[in-house]
Image (cartoon, rainbow, N blue to C red; front, side, top):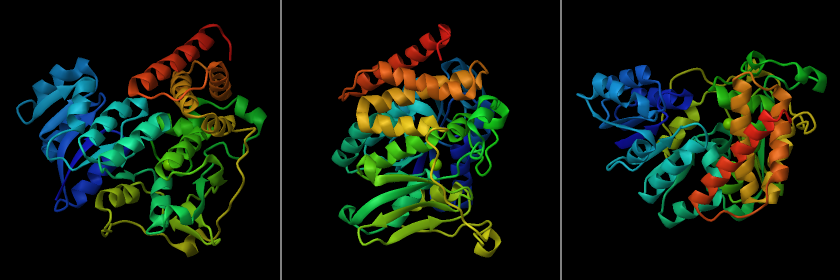
Length: 385
Ligand code: MG
């Protein structure tokens, strides 16, 4: 039986992870649950799964959580609590389903404690891929991708060697604005952006999917996870989201993974790897699907994807800045304070301001992240976007 520590247990990936655990009680034990602030749901989860530790990220809610379930389990809070959950003794796998760069420090500590990682937090590799992959290697830790594209690539690679891979083909649904013109994009609303055609996800990642920054972050994540050069990664728009990604090998063979758009599949595969377990639910019916379409992404219209490739080519610090500026700009968009196209324009300005470097510590990365967020606020406050 595998002991799981679930960081981000009340979010979209976290709740689906618990669905997988609920369906397989003989395989999984929940050792720790950590949530940002939704203590109503966290309380329910604690009562159901009886973890040894429950953590609320928002320290202001510590006492309330303690009064509700403090008699059932140990309670902790804040970033220290997240790290406590990440390194908990006896937990075998840490599921990192926290949103944003907040996932970085707990994930790094989990690796140092030799926990295998089911990685759903893409910002960890985007901002610190070099340090994280080196730490994983040094500690003999497996990083198992939960993101559907990276899981598809991981499954497609199988036993093939790194040398045999020619390139990765990351598929993208294209988001809700795939067929909109540049003029139409000027007027789209937050509600339009939150209305994803194929996937139900949290708000930040849904906006990232509308700008295609999500795909950009995934390109950077794939570079680190699979040790690829930037030019070995291609993005292919595939509106049906049936092919979750593919790998082209040096002999021209292309192997892809297909399935319905259900995150429980990549979650379960990461948790049961190297085995496969049965899973209830609807299965892919090719006759029902009929047609699969593929397009080149429009990098003029979806500037964020172009900026992600540019950042990847500039190097490590640019990826930190890209990510930090994006988190801050998406935050402003979610608050209704900037327009949809401002997101890309602001990130571009911040990238232009930054000086390229290779941060060698987590502290440097966190400082650079903070710098890029401050630049976004400054640009916003001076009306420059
Ligand atoms: Mg994805």
